Length: 190
Image (tube, rainbow, N blue to C red; front, side, top):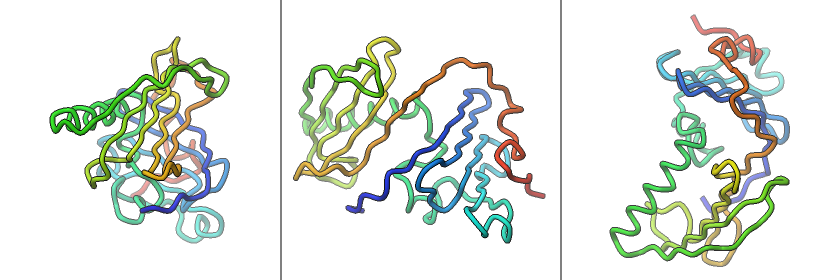
C-alpha cells in the first residue's frame, strides 16, 4: 500500500509434506511472535502466538492465512511460503506479462547476497494491480539455484518490498513433530 514497514527478521522452518511452515520473529515483531501453518490442520488456519501481554490474555489465536488483518503485515500469505511457491508466483507474473507483451527483462549481472554468489534477474512491468512491482530484482544463488533475495521497486526507484533468505540449512531432517504448537509456545486449539 505504498508504505514500507520496519524490517522484520524471523527464523523459519519448512516441510514439503505435509506443507508446513513455522515462523518465529526475532526483530520487529508484527502482531504475533510466532506463526504455525500446517496445510489441512486447524481448518486450514494458521496458529498465531500474539506478542507481549496479548499472548497471556488471548493464548493461541487462529487466523486464515489471507485474512485482512494478517495481510496488513505481509505481501503473501504463509500458505504461499517457500522457494517453490515463490518461484511459481514469479513465473506466473512473467507468463502473464509476456502474454500481454508488457514485460521487459534483463540480466543484472552478479552480486553477493548474505555471503553467497548470486546472479541477478531484473524485470520491469507497468504499474498495474495484477503486477507486484514496477521493477523486480531476483537474486538466484549460483550454486543452489534458489532465489536468495527478491526486491520490488516503484517507478521512482524506491524499495517497496524485500525478501531475503540467509543462513540456509537444507534437508536437515525436519519431521511433523517440528511443526506442533508447543514447539512455538502455543497450545493446540480445541
